Image (cartoon, rainbow, N blue to C red; front, side):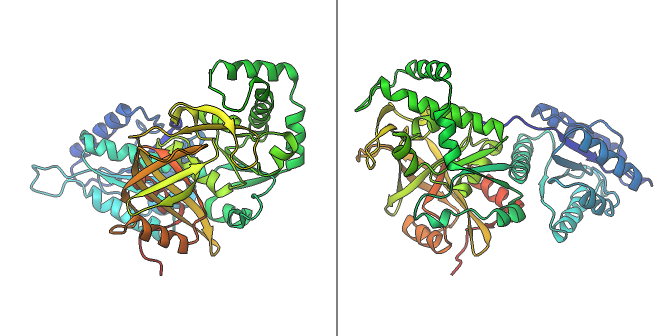
Length: 455
């Protein structure tokens, strides 16, 4: 699942005084417009006149904000006034994408200085600690358009996280202290607003779901025709209550993600685990993290903006030199599973867990964002799910790691480094390979990337 693309505001930097090859400038501007239209990005400002002074720059930024743009794409086919970078930094809160276009290849003189101009802007934005990306290339080239899509996705992820509202029902699970959420560090560093919600009130909400709604939802679950092992049709109603209550809470509080303290209160008080409900919500694009893992929920927020879909939070159960065995009680998206069935939890012997391994021979990205020493860190690595001789209840995935953020290290060494950086025991699995996109997203968010020895 990917997020719909929000509008991208285009700001073209012009010149008051003649200079450079203005015919080439128009060619590059036209080709850039063709590229943006080809990737179906809504682009207010694309056909507006180029800005040439302080007033036209301020006016253009105001129009783009009014159009709901979250990313500003700056075109500079001919070098303009570098002072406008300071105006943008002051008056634009979102990420900036600088697109530098090439020189006229057959010209005997410098035709644009576009890369020089965007280099200047990038150095200024970095000095001001403002988030930006830069791409360079001929707009009609497929490789340039691929880089454009990727950079826009990174900008989308930044805006999604910075504007996110994340809820937590209760607290972290008992003993899982490293998952304690710090609302101040989260808002200061990531821009995420944390909303604390009452666990007793949520339990009351589950119990109060109207019976007709429960019966309708039970019929929808029956239609899935999931095999049952140690559970019966009579066990479906409580999970439908969980599902409806969670969906209602997310909508009512306008949450982008939610973490819940489901263990041990929910099975002990309500008689069931909420994992079938969570698996169904994940398939619908809702982010619901278990065990009160708020930072895990924020990690999952990044995925849809990058085209990586919803993340599945899982335990790092065991590993060898090349593979990692991931496991969690059954609450992965149903669409990821190979032959899902409904069963009981291996520990507190109550329903409803969805048992099934994740499909094999699928590309995956393993990623995590976490807080330690009062700041945020992030990691990612890529691999492929492979056949696993071990059969466990819940959801399992054996992943052969093919690319790590920590070059030249096997899984043992990678795990040791991550542990000493304070990474909690949950990581998120995403479908597809997105390591580089996660790295760039972390850089834009000002999060320290684990790709070097921290010792």
